[in-house]
Amino acid sequence: MALRLQAPINASPNSPIAAAGNAGLRLNSGRFALKSSFFSTVHLFLPSSSYAPTTATAPKFSMRVASKQAYICRDCGYIYNDRTPFEKLPDKYFCPVCGAPKRRFRPYEPAVTKKANDMDVRKARKAQLKRDEAIG
Image (cartoon, rainbow, N blue to C red; front, side, top):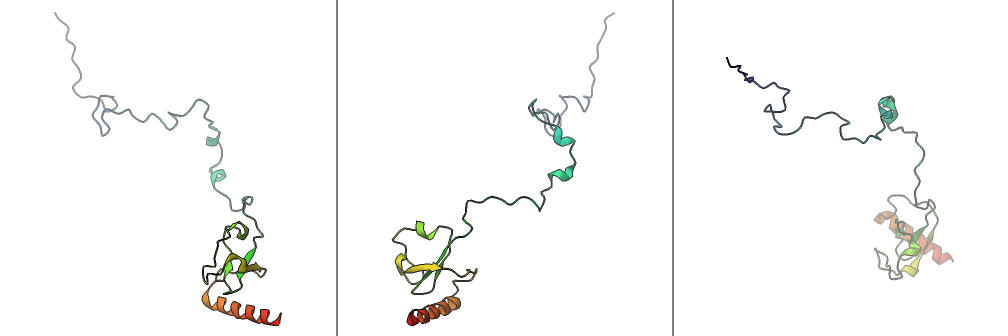
């Protein structure tokens, strides 16, 4: 009398030899399977609202100077108000509108608006500069 062992015909769906869409690959064993043993799970106990960014956060620090000086071209009224400080521009800098050299620019005190270099605004400013220079 010989004992016969019969192998199961159908492989169970949880079996690692079962054919699946990711055949030959390991099953996902969990979210934290590849995390270090030093991984902190404290965030699991905190309420989810602590991760939402709040609008009343502390102001961000910036390396830019808040009181940046604007410069005006005395020939055409163009206002230089870019990120690069005017003093750090090379001596060969020229006005992009009229081509005047850097020495023709003067400090400009009034507040500079976004559309300060539109043609109509610039022409009015140039006329005002001419009047101011004529007076003295």
